[in-house]
Length: 179
Image (cartoon, rainbow, N blue to C red; front, side, top):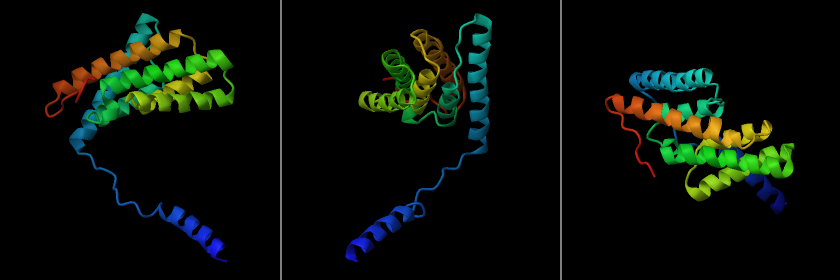
């Protein structure tokens, strides 16, 4: 009977964690909301425009997630240049290597994300869109070209746009650190 109660208590404690959070969602000023929208529009529009006019694939879905970090919370450690470039490159390298070694079976797609996360944590370059880069690359059988365009070139372009925009706006400074 005591064992049953212990398991029951563990289950109860597990589900109570859903309701006991003392952390509240941050609120954002209207100014910050407006600036985040304008900045992300300009950053993604730049990638799309350059991609269409240069015939290089410079845009990828994970850049949408990067834009959230870069323009909504530019002070976040996850939005710093080292993290953006390093995280996206590690995501691309991981998926390319695993796909070339093992094909793109579903387990390779999952392993690409898991290994990319581990590498980003080890190298202090955690950038959540880097996990998306790994997944997109594994799902699309990415070749070595994926590393350079869209991943590296796109990362550099969106970072350049972020740097220009956030430093033109009063009360915003980007980046907080380079390395």
